[in-house]
Length: 433
Image 1 (cartoon, rainbow, N blue to C red):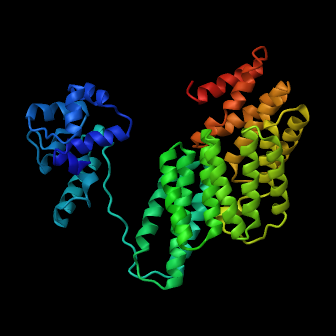
Image 2: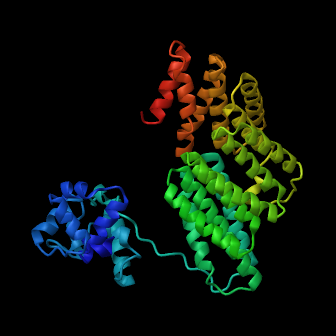
Image 3: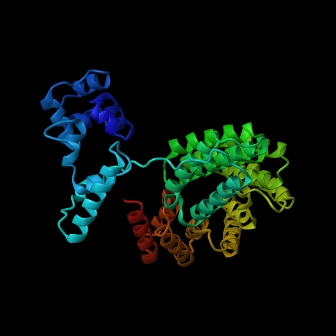
């Protein structure tokens, strides 16, 4: 962006704004230009008039110096600006040291006047150099960090670790160019695939569905290149979950079916069980009750065949998860007996949850609270729903907020119950409504 501003490449700048949700009209209102002018600039017309460049800079709150406007050179940077650009500019090291010492002295002696408005400017950081040669130990470290980040995601939500996952993914991709043996090469490719898998999942959790699809596509290519059908099946499962969450049920079904085939070819019973359980959930949402129950039966049969010492990307799927998905399915099927089964399964899954699974617990408490409210158990429904809301306030996950909607609708069905009305109000507040 700084390079585009310096070169007055406003077509690039405006296109980036468009990608962030700004329309041509929005940009025109900010820069005091007509929509047709904005369209012409985005089409490649250069802006040469000094006054227009100033309007654009001021309207978009761009420091004029970034566009070479006014009396501006590097020496006129504030101390804060100097500190932020140390190590990312082309001045020699002696000048860097001089400016760093000058800034430190001014700050510590109280003579510096910090300009906090500049603090939001992006910090340009050089990439950490990767080793020329890598071995099994380097891949072990990557796999360990991926497990740590995955655990943070499960407990605190994708918003708590997505940036770290993205950075680690970029570093791992750079390591693919290092010298290594063929076996290490395969391991690093697999590690990169799993990092993209996690990057996709954390992106999904914070509502960046387009980015999630991109990372999952990259992960799938790497998994297939290393002939890891188990990981490929897991990636397809997660792609199915993205589309299930978005309400694209036909697409979700196709992803899950593709994953099921890959898991079967990999002879990975636990992944087969996970995919069939999610297929059951999808069928239930589509109103296919018999197919949903049949898929659950297959999931339970395959689950008992699961093995120990499984890869991290599937090892999370345990008895609590199968019980939770069973409860989700039955909560969508008609009839009081099915709702009773749902309540029993969801209660069991919550009870079986251990430490580090806050997000899953939120989902299950949400479904359990809604199920109880739907059968008229306001006391139980409000209690479970309130626990879900308290936990949802503590994690950084857009998805958990989205999934509160059925609980909100169930609570709104009891306007005469003070507890249900209060719960509905808390959910609406959390959702920004």
